[in-house]
Image (cartoon, rainbow, N blue to C red; front, side):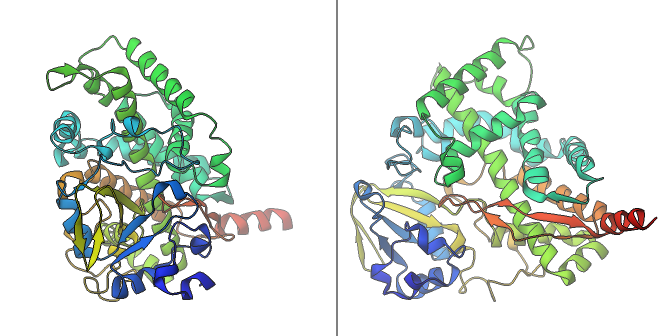
Length: 425
C-alpha cells in the first residue's frame, strides 16, 4: 500500500497514477465505501477537467446506472478530454452507444441486439470452440509463452472479427486500434498515439473498403447490419458506422481478454481451485461469474449530472462527472460475503455482479457472447494445459479505464521435463 492511501480521504486523488502503483487500491475503495461513498477527486493531472466523483457502493452504482435522466452518459462522454485524450472530441464520443442517452441509444442498440440474444450466441458455439482450439494449437509445442500476448489477444480478436465480418489477417490491426482508443494512458500504448483524427480516418477508410468489397447484401455480419440499418428514418453515416465498429471491436477485444487473463492467473495461483475445476468442469460456469465479479474488464463507466443533486450529503452540481467504480461495487462487503475471496460456491452471481454494468439502459450488449467465450476458453485451457504454471511476474496495463494485464509469462512443466530428457540423451 502506497503512502497516499494513508492520507485523509479528502486529500486523495484517484486519478493520480501513484495510487495505482501497487495494483488496484482495493483497501482504499473499502475506506471510501465506509467513509466517503460519494468521494471527490480533483484530478490534478488534468486541472481543466474539473475532477470527478467516485461512486463505489453497489446500490449507488445500480441507482445511478438506472437513472439516465439525472445522470447522463452523453453530457460529458466516457473519456476525460485532457491532454492525453485530446483528439477524442465529445461529438465523436457521442456517436458510440456508451456515450448516448435514450431515445437514440435505444434505437441504435436495437439495430444489433438481435445478434446477441442467447439463441443467436448459442449458434456460435462450435465456431468459437474452433477459434480457441486453433490459437491453443499455436502454443501447444512451446515450453514457455505469454498467456496474454499469445493467447488472450488473438482469440477475442478473431471471435469479434468473425462477427464483424473482417478477415483473420486484419486481427492484429484491429487489436492495435482497440489499444490506442482504450488504453492510451499506458506509456507503451501512448507511444503509438499520435493523431486521433488520423486513426479515425484510417478506420473509416477501412470500414468503407470492407463494405465496398461485399457483394452479398444479405450477409448477417454486424457491419452489414449497420450498413443497411436506419435510425429515425435515416441511414447511419460513415462516421457513425466507423465509431459503432470501434465500440464493438473494443468491447469484444478488451472485455474477454481482461477477464480470461485475470481468472486464469487466479487459477494458476490457486492449486485447490484448479483441482476443483479440473475434476468437475460443471463448475466452470461459476468460475466465469466469479471471475467477472472479481476482475471486471472495465474499471468504471462515467456519467454526468444533468442537474444539481445530492448523494450521501454531497452536492453534485450540474455537469459534474461521476465514475461508477465496478472494481469497488463488485467487492462491496455489504453485498458479497468475504468479497476479496475468489469463491465459486457463491449463489446467484450471474444476476448480482456488475461486471456488465449496473443494469439500466447500458447493460452490456455482448454479455451472452462473453460468457460463452470465457467458459469454452477456460475449459479448453485447463484440458490442454493441465501442467501450466507461472514463469515470472505478471504486469498490468497502466490505464485507469482498463483493468487488465499486458503480460502473464507461463511455462509447461511437461515440456520442460521433455527438454531435459532430450538434453540428457
